Length: 73
Image 1: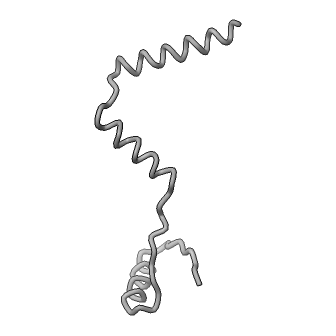
Image 2: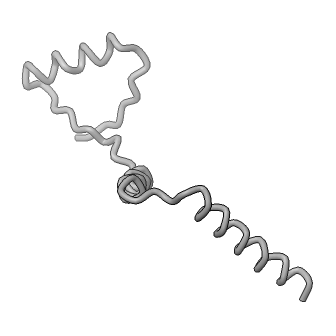
Image 3: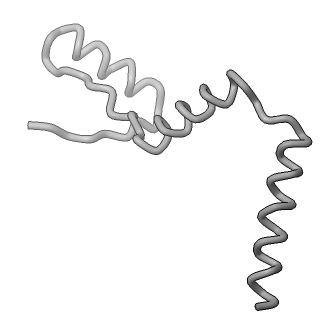
């Protein structure tokens, strides 16, 4: 049987850990959010070769010019 429990008080976490130590329950970390995994992976890649302020400005200007051109057409 599986339950998902949100711990509101740190004392409850201690009690759950003690129950796990007694082999009465098992605890699995289910806080693995797939979205956050993607964000972490992207941040890790960006840290290797971060874009300069000039590159960011150039990209923003490019997107704005395309968007403005669509609005006029």
